[in-house]
Image 1 (cartoon, rainbow, N blue to C red):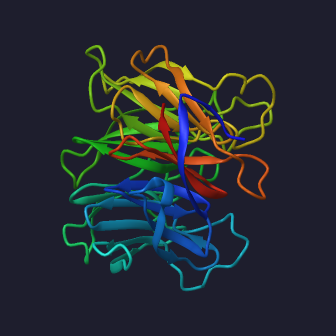
Image 2 (image 1 turned 180 degrees about the vertical axis):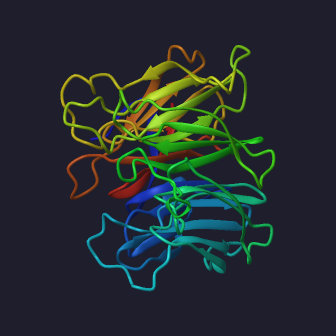
Length: 373
């Protein structure tokens, strides 16, 4: 049975396992973890009676698990899925697809931007640009690529940024193992791009000149910790006259006795010198060795106040109060039912809509809709 404190379930979308979910104006857009399921558009205006409107499919060995929407424009990623044992089509190239979803029952493909290598993992979207975590020919692992989509039928690359050592074709030599340092998730606020970089922590980039991103600062906590950095989310308002970001590490890599992933509050008032001032872990998670995908994964990227939902893998959704960033504390939680045929919950992504309803995907199956009580 579901476990809850301060939250209750008000709906459920019975669909394939979800990566990212976006909800706008009563419609949910769900990117799925595994082919043949790609992206599903769902009418959730009545959360107790959600209705699937359309479904996009993917080829074996690939997936399209991330999605963004801006008005009637929907963007989805396309990527090789190394967790899928099936062989992808030899002609497959990863990238992003841009759709017109004015008719949500019939998405219309406007363009497909392709790249070499694995493809696009995560991305951000505004009225003019796409900020991609993407592989590219001649580079080791994912880098930052910015696309101009003013004409969505003809995306144009305007710039890229990478850590020194990633440009193999340019003669750079990495001083890290394999693909440990790679762009995971860029997020724009103002003239800065806050970019998680997996086992290289995060980097803050100056993009006042969108054609020439410049690194301002960064912070790498691997080591002493092992879990890669998933998201560096800037808070869009000051708290006690200071500026902060919340950083979620992802509980997908660590040795058996390594510290599970947790949430950090970082003071970025002086952007050149970011400083960790607070952390949060679900009570009991560190008491004994934990299997992977037990602890922190992803926080809600829509900030509406000083309480934020966080998807905590096997521990469901935790609502964290960050009004005092030096003392992060949980004020509510909801652990959904284990999906049929599964052994435990795997809460993967979480978002909130205009009504204050919270949506959480399970990477194995379904979307649970909850609200505060």
